[in-house]
Image (spheres, rainbow, N blue to C red):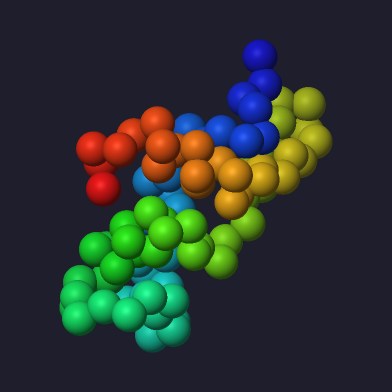
Length: 85
C-alpha cells in the first residue's frame, strides 16, 4: 500500500516541525505574529495555521518520488488531531 498524497504520517509531521524549528532557531523569518520565543512553539503555530513553506517528497520502494500535497495534508492532520495543538 502506498500512503495517500493528501495525508501525512506521524513521522513526517515530526520531521516538518523539527525542520521548521531548526530554521527558526537559525534565523529564518517567522511567518506569524507572536511574542513566543521558543522555536518549537512557533513552528507548531505555523503548522496549525498551515503556513509552513516546506515541500514534502516521499521516496517510494520502487525508486520513484512522490510529492505530497502539503497544504491539503496539513489541513487534514490538524482536523484529525485537534487536541495536539
